[in-house]
Length: 284
Length: 226
Image 1 (cartoon, rainbow over the protein chains, first blue to last red):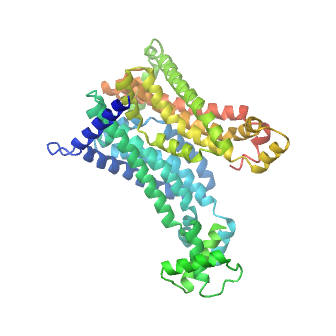
Image 2 (image 1 turned 180 degrees about the horizontal axis):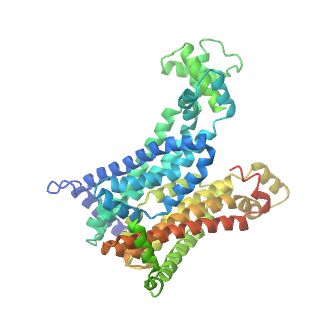
């Protein structure tokens, strides 16, 4: 039983390696399908985000707009993707847009609520502080509200990207590329399981890698939310100046500060102190 | 506009409403597959989510499992099982379950985890045992979130049950697949409209269920904020 499963897995891997790229048919191997899949899904997610941001903003600004827009997006989401792909065919033909337009619209069902919730959950005192510091509406949006909303938006982006990457496979039923084409034409039509398994595994891997990249992006974009990083920076900024007496650093923290100081070049000055201050108000 | 008139004519055709290929029969099949898939998923996901949420163990595993299932391409699962088990209802149900388990599982887990610790302490303080706390406190408090998960799953299942037609089973997907084969845009559009209608009905059904199942104390205030 185990030997059989092993043999089967070996056969699948063997097929995948042997067909990784086919010099005779440049767009039919595993690699071309994978890149097609990436192109279709990333383009859809990107367009979805580009649509969701202004739409979400508008919905936060004009509250009565939100319920009907959300209902519309939800109804759209209920349309089966195959049907939408077919209905796009007369207009866009066999171009990428046939898959990208419906998929981008689907991502809105996750992205829009997250953008709206993210912008709405900005604490009132933070907004007021920004106003008091002389931030106009636009600067407030760009420098205060959007950064605070980033974790929520990225959370939505993670769900949307995984869903989109797995849904691109359906596009193969319409004759579009991607890993679904591997599953359909190399696997199902020839009653051969190896291409199907390779297609499934690569789709899942692509989804996981994309997810990991998004998590990393969130860490980079929101340094204040990092457990250790934010504190270190704050301590470091305050330490050498000796100005922060409100919370006297305890011994382990002092040690950590020293450690951080050794590891990274110490930058002191009003600039770093300022960002640290902002960071603190955001997390509270 | 022409297409709308054609669509109307398609729906108005009396032949559309009788026999095995008629709308009522196809709708019945579609509802049957969707309901079966959703029930199977709930049977798998709700107890699992209650367990992991209650014990706090396996939370990471649950999330990973749900993420994995979410990443699975539905048609890949469908075709692979068709090759292994042959054409029939089994592959369709497997694909639908893989689709519906993640939202139900995650929401059940989060719903139970999200019960206020004060309430849980109070329940234990009143002398409730672990399973009593789970069934009398945590489950009722988690119901709204579980229902949201079920609704998300149900809408996806209804939309995706369409692919059943690709492996030779019935349902509203037949109109879309046959329409594609005959280059009949109206037929495909008609099928899509019916699926959307069913999805909207599903959403309404869950709004009703929410009214029925959520404990009166939770309907306003505490839950409204979520």
